[in-house]
Amino acid sequence: MTTDPVLQANDLSFSHVGRIAPTFESVSLRVARGEIVALLGESGCGKSSLLSVLSGLARPRSGSVSFNDRHVLATPHGISVVFQDPCLLPWLSVAANAGLGLDFNSMGLNKAERDSRVASALAEVGLSTDTTLYPEQLSGGMAQRVALARALARQPELIFLDEPFSALDALTREDMQSLLVQLVHKHGSSAIIVTHDIDEALRVSDRILLMGGAPAGIVGEWQLTAVLGEVPRKRYTPASLQLRDEIIAALSSDPTPVAENAPAAFIVSDSFTTHHTMEESS
Image (cartoon, rainbow, N blue to C red):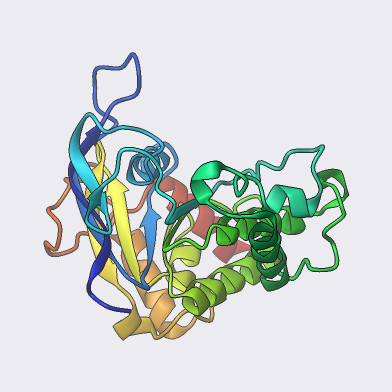
């Protein structure tokens, strides 16, 4: 991982159509090459909206986003997006879904190149023998692997993931987290993963950015590698449990966004406390 940013956002604000109040404002961030960043916050705080703006799927009300020093107006070829819903077309096979979008003229690929990318991506996610199956024949984990293969087939420098594993069972989710880290490192890509799961953020990311407030902003930042080691990490180690407790203990009823690179203030929602209290009492 280098400190050279692949993505940079400056003073972003965003409002949904028909709403005057901003969903988030004054958001600035950088993502280094090879870095995995977790965007953490309670449900409804604006994480997915920020991801849409950063990836070029939505326009900010103000501010700018640059990818490889180029202003982002629409999703560039070097970016892929994976959603919580795998978004598979039911009438297409696994191979056809994985190759969706590679036929666009703007991609500049012939059939042989397209087929090679699809075959390689499906092999990397462990689906090389399932290429002729259809979405109705897939488990939730398999469907999300197809979505990840579709992202990889674009050979992205940066992958955005919007709570991609939240609908999966615990064991499948952990397998997919490990696979994500493995593939991001293998290809030298960067990733931003949106999550409201503290444990997921601690396990897969090099750095956590916390969103909170109304309107939302970046209210905290934590560099993890020096404290917890390389990803993917084991769960519930003494260091990760201490950090998890610190995040939960730092709850604030009135979080104030902080500037990029300012000292971190760790804010976690009541939903996090409830989630982990239930875990600990079970």
